[in-house]
Image 1 (cartoon, rainbow, N blue to C red):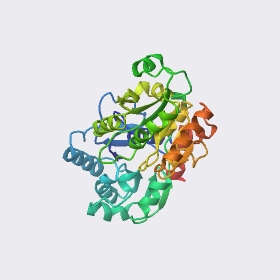
Image 2: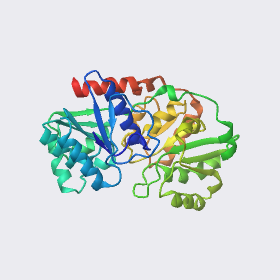
Image 3: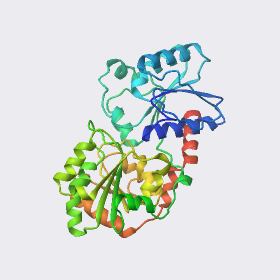
Image 4: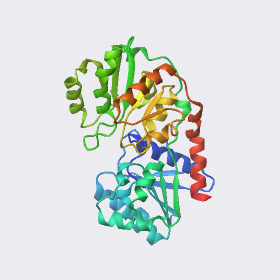
Length: 354
């Protein structure tokens, strides 16, 4: 498997890759797995017993290319080559073709919603045997421009390790740190990327004055980091809510659940989510979720069965959904078990081995 990051990585794709490798390594049909990441930052953490996590490719694309070709073309023959990002497809096609291996590609979100503009990549999607997508919306948008894979497609949504979350009181130290006592807390969690601006941070800042006019106890937590944070902070000033928007910066992994539990409603009126793992994390902490019906977030709330779906461009729908979610209170929806890690592993085995 060639991939961007997994162990020693951050973000939704990194988490997905960790779960994918963890599940792959315990399937009875699998003897061993070798994965070459482009990025890995210590500590790497515990690895599955059947996994070789090869770090020879760290240090730039040239070094990664050399390591991938050396391992892929001269090491033990693989039965399956897994492409963990479409940008790595040329390397994977070359290895799979020369080693006569099955080629599987994982797709996640906006990176495949339209052609990549890399001629070789866009042409060689026809060489893929199986495409595994994180969501229906991502698969549909990919298939709108890409050649059909030779053996078909499958959908494998994110996994959630329910045992790592659960309901609990708001952490006193975080309540004090961010001034959340007696406040109604709304939260969005994600990367603040200037090239995307599709998570819903803007929409939440824009609606906050309207919400506070009805209930001054509202406060909004924008959790995460990215190069768009300065612009979002300036926007909060522009809309007169700078004192009621908390920018946390990067959240420590070991306190992630504590941060989600601060929220009374998790709101992400996004337009570019391939799936939206953060919805699963929030709901696993008992926090009601408001998602967009326009992207993969709709699938994370199981098409509205375990959360509230809205048009992200409608402030009326967003406001009504927030008050509806508050009225429902906190609880872990029973339907969330659909995404539990054991089910993820079972689905993966069926996709690869029938």
